[in-house]
Image 1 (tube, rainbow, N blue to C red):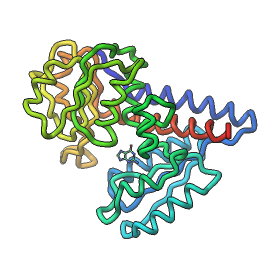
Image 2: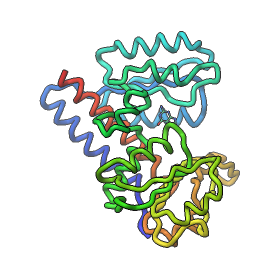
Image 3: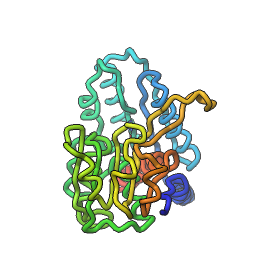
Length: 293
Ligand code: GUN
């Protein structure tokens, strides 16, 4: 069993980007500028956005945090989006999800300039991804592809089972793994809440990518020997013995699954840290594309 170490790999990627930023500066070029929009005070969202901004500072990007009230109207948020689209200094930005219930998430994502959509959530970018064109790949799936590639995990002709069909992880993951090339060329089954007898699929999977949000869901008796397991779950489970009062728990029961696996991501320290690194990589790409124009 080999751990797919997202913490180390994400540090490697951030170091590679930082080196490129230094080169850009030395050449007198503008450095990439990322903004993050957060609406309200959801604890997990604040943590993620804080990490994104901190990472920008570490690698020499410019960053802007746009904190908005939970009570902002949809129209006011759309005005803010328009402002960010028109801000010529800004290369890319993200609107942290989830948004408050009174705001139509799809409407907001549609309003983001696709050229600045470094989350890759806009339908134009999602379509380009499906059509194998150059675009911003959604950060979490992109991070998984990067882990598979850097650890040289074989994917061609393998049976990949994705659990969960969210727009952010499961659905794009199923598309990426079926695309031509490496990593990809996989035969993909996308399972979800209406799938019957899910173990029939997981037991026959060479690669399992789970993005369900149910702690310790995937057990050792649901997988075959040699399986590659990617755990995207990051549920906060209450734990009074921990200083924070919770522990981050994945979808995979690591104790029973890891002995059967050839490669597996830990939680924490697997997919999570990769997401931020890939967002930064997308922002660097956004800057490069803008500098060509
Ligand atoms: N919420 C959970 N994951 C993500 C992400 O990758 N991007 C944004 N914008 N919001 C999220």
